[in-house]
Amino acid sequence: MPRFQFKGRSNDGQLVEGERDAQSPAALAEQLMDKGVIPLQIREKQQQADVIDQIMTRFDLYRISVEELLMFTRQMAALNKAGIPLTRAISGILDSVRNPLLIRALEDTLTQLESGRPLSMAFARHPKVFSNLYVSIIQVGESTGQLDHAFSQMAGYIERNRKMNQNIKAALRYPMIVIAAIAIALVIVNLFVIPKFAAFFEANHLELPWQTVLLLNTSKFFTEYWPWLLGGLLAAWAGFRYWISTEDGRYRWHRFVLRAPLFGDILLRAYLSRFARSFAMAYGAGVPIVQGMGVIARSIGNDYIGRHVAGMREGIERGDTLTRSAQRTEMFTPVVMQMFAVGEEAGNLQEMMTYIADFYEEEVDYDIKTLADRIEPVIYVLIGALVLVLALGIFVPMWDITQLARR
Image (cartoon, rainbow, N blue to C red; front, side, top):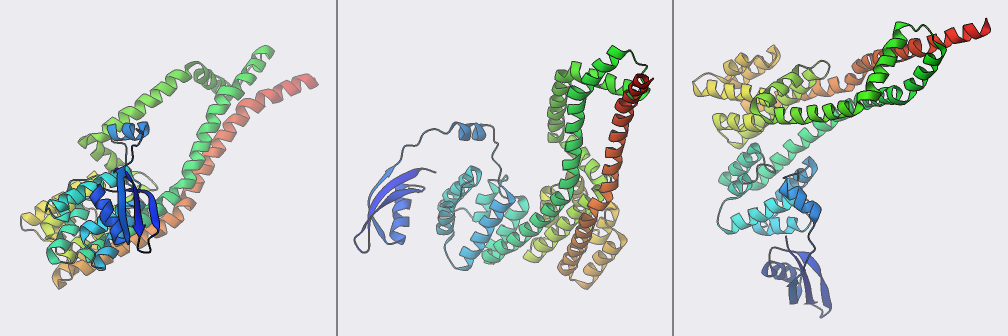
């Protein structure tokens, strides 16, 4: 967005000058007059090229955080509820936005709105900012005249997902830090500590136990081939990133993550909670079930679950009930399947799906609180094994040298 320098007079005749971002001089003049400032001079400020911004834009590296999307959604809900026109609301929000990706999306949205296109269609042009579910809820809000309610619904949905993701990250932070510390310690020991002992043992011509031989050979391998190891790790990481960028690779990786020990089951229930919450919100907003299932399948964030949801959608299109379609996926527990059946029979599917989401969220919260207790024994065993190998490999030969010195 271009930046303009302006001079003007306030209502009491005081000179006002400054800088501000705006779509055009006319848009800035309108903003100033809304604040009681009569513009006298407006000119665009020449800005130096930002090399970092050009690189980030060229390689499409900008991302929008959950917090930024949540703040924008809440602002739009409040401004729509106050009856402020969309173009004016988005123009006002643009003054406080700093994320280049969101700025470009909102600028294009303004252009689309001024051309007569609906808001949902403008949002759909920016899938990296607005998901399929987001666009669908906004589309329903436009068609029913309850756009402020649609934004409020999305804000609540984003907030719940944000809290759950934060809880999962907080639970995994401790074990990840410990594992990283162990890895760093192993690298330091193999590259700097053990080679000193190797020279000492070789000078004394000791008969070394197998633990020491293992440590010395491992250290020798690290010191001689560490550039190749580093290059191999970088190549493996690049290959992994390429693999998960493919449709089949991403599906297999997402399936593996959900089946991983300790935390796979937690992630599965977190995604199922997201599915149930999304379904309840879309169904309550008036989105047809088939369309809603298709939107959820594309925006749930896990290809493995997304394919199962797409399979449920195909079953409903063939005439099956939601309960039978869900049962074939084998993702839901018998208790949840009973909730599906009761919701369909009683005609309160939205309420039951909300109960299911709450049920899964409670289970995830409990498992997250106990995750550290389950991971700690594994970490202790790893640290104990590392200390044992180092102790036997280093201190046993040193003990032999001490005994020889005493004799």
